[in-house]
Length: 428
Image: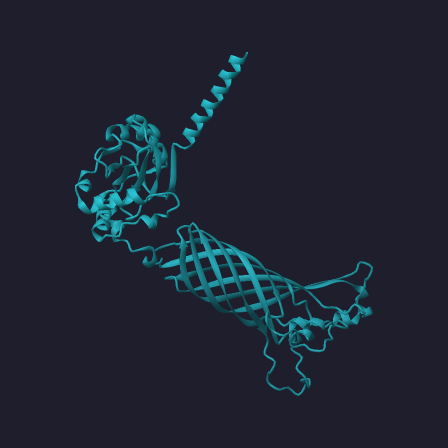
């Protein structure tokens, strides 16, 4: 029984040691999204007298571990191993690659070495340095003079197993078709992302929800106290008729449908339709309203904005468009009023209640941002100030009242909204 316990104990220790060695067989310091080509040319570059990898066996390892790689070609990079500048950089890498470093810390800074990376075209350089019990690995391509990936693998005398370790650690991701000469020349002639040509026209359509109120942020509340406290008596009487917000609730949800476009990433236009619903501010102390069930006005607005924009690309997958807008709108009001079921005949005041004076004309301005993901799916936030009104001063009439009686001659509010958009580029 004791012998069985001893055997079991030794088996557990050996298993732990085996799995620990497997867990530490590789250590990838960093691995960017570098392009692994199908049918790739792999150039094995080493500062050592004898390469730790066998090129033929390594190509077989690549095919075993990545079925999409096709027919890779592997060879020693003798051209660089005979070049003084390249071998100095290779020796420097051997002494400096370690965990915790970022790719730019290992960048080649000698102009001649930087030029060598630029002439690789679509070949992949696999740097291998023997450090005794492990190998230092780094992957380079034509896109940069700094490593695209780096790390270590455990060294083994078995060339087949050694190739398998490297292939498994660094060459396991998806492959892409190699570029033709024409495609490569086209990419070389394309400008940098920061200076690339913007599309001739970018368009979008969206829907948004938001909120509007009479009080503009960062302005004194005393400016709006009269509007907020105002109540309508006898269906038509208020202390002031200049603003619609003396008759209706000034704060309400806001919904918008819109579509627009920008030319050359700078100037454009947008059409929109906005809807909101406003309850009339009836005076609850007025007994005349005992006959009333509800009284609201639906606000419908159509308009046009002129937009000025500036585009940024903080990430490959996201475009950021900052914009300001200035426009005009027409506002129409649809009354929704109803008496209680128990009331058959309305009062005289009900019949002579105030009426809106459609259409109202106004201006709006503001600013916002559009975050566009994957060139199509947008999230927009905007805020601004809008107005609507009617001319107070008209041709004098002998029957005119002593005071202006225009309902809503000057009405102003602040709004903010968040929208979901779809963007597309019809032509470039």
